[in-house]
Image (spheres, rainbow, N blue to C red):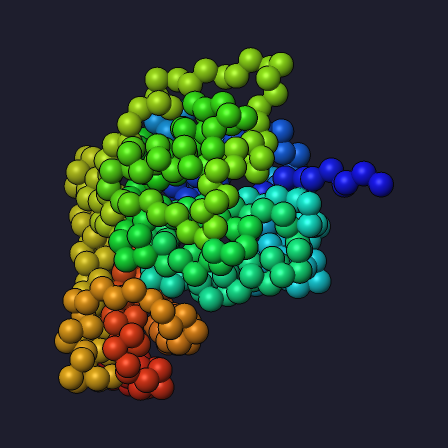
Length: 415
């Protein structure tokens, strides 16, 4: 009896919402276009994105999303598998592990999941905000322990022959640093476990960033290359050289980096002439900006370009409010560290320690997000994430989870 033909499965997820975060959904839309161009059928691709960008009131080109300056509309044809409130951690993990019963949908449409088997391959791409040990979804966080735990279980249950995951977020290395080295799993992150990723291509018409440096280079390389003769290792070498502001990292089983990219992501039909890369698509990333500074840069740009004095003053007030919120967040985290451990708290504010206690970090981060929920509901939620390293330092220096959680509750109630 012949072996069942393998299928390529693709899961693409943007974790953010709001116009300021345009780039994350734009990157997912572009990745979808690449997968389709490579011959992966829609029934084997799942797209998760809030879908509040194409028809956003701030979009001067309704129905269009671009990912490079003057680029093509990457929104066209993108399936609305999971949008709005359905873009959740619960659904993402259920989709990944092929658990249709575990999906909870508010919007209409099928509960589409990866129905992968032991002969199939899976490619996962995440684009959004992150911090040490977590990747942010619109209303909650995906924790490294849950992502890696799910992949480990899928490996044991033989739900794939090979799995490749790319993560674009600040501290993205921390999400996949614990991928198993003895399983058929390989991962690439946009940055190290402790450093930010960078936005690029500030568009003056749209008043937002179009892409991220790592993803723009990954997608460009995929379009420039013959995927039937290019390995993941060759792509990683390219990314290492071309991504200048963050440091891409490899995790999991590096033997899989020797695989041809077409073995995981398919390849364009050789009988159809490839679309040429325009000069705009091939341009080097510009306006490189740390992800957490994006809201400030966008607001500054709006102020500079606004001619109406009254509107300009309103924009300035919004900018000042943004700074005030950031100062309050910084002060609150400083107070939490001091209250949790007067001896080690001051050092935790400046230290950058690698995360080893994944489960403890999940407990603290969830309590912080739940307690200070108002900061995560604002467009500048990446600022709160920027300070997660303080909790990592406290945990890794031996401060008990209960003490840190109590300090978070105390500081919030005494603001």
